[in-house]
Image 1 (cartoon, rainbow over the protein chains, first blue to last red):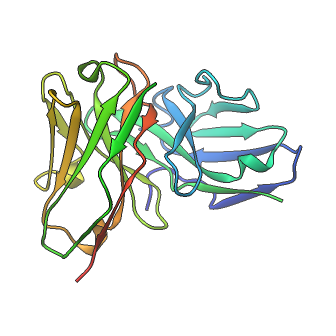
Image 2 (cartoon, each protein chain N blue to C red):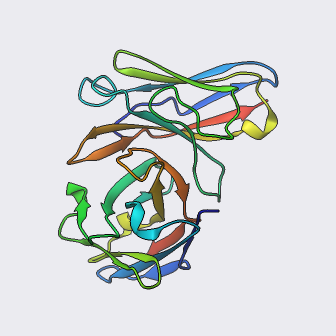
Length: 111
Length: 121
């Protein structure tokens, strides 16, 4: 069982927007503004798309945005495209001892 | 550009050990920590620990302490993770991952291609 809770799956049609939630606790998501999100196509390496809750690495589309409220972080993908179909993992810093914990991953299907 | 190239897939029997390598290129090897993350079938990602390639210092997730060893060879820009006393629960894809920043960073912008470890009798 993963430390952070994500929905197992979400779906949307091309052009629509979807939001993936990532529920943690006051020990992780709620305690640090250090939530990151990874896009993971099967058989490939994960790709960092959001770090420090809201920041996008260079080259990542502005269709991806992150936010946080209390102990829950969220990833929103706007203008869904077929290439967005992948697994999405959230991640939160939890302190120097355990460092980071991940969610169980959410499979995004573009209908 | 940054590249992390891992060693090939492995098949091991329960009780055995495995050593996976990750060769870095395209940046100053000793300037960034390296982390190891794994993903078991149908599960989420799981952080295993980090190594400081400059000093050789390591820090392991409590779950793996006593069973995992991370090392590096600065002469060839390679980091290794060795996991001992394998069980079927260790069947997973293992990734090396470099942090986003050469300073402190909790997120990883460069990943190896993954090494599949299968543990079965």
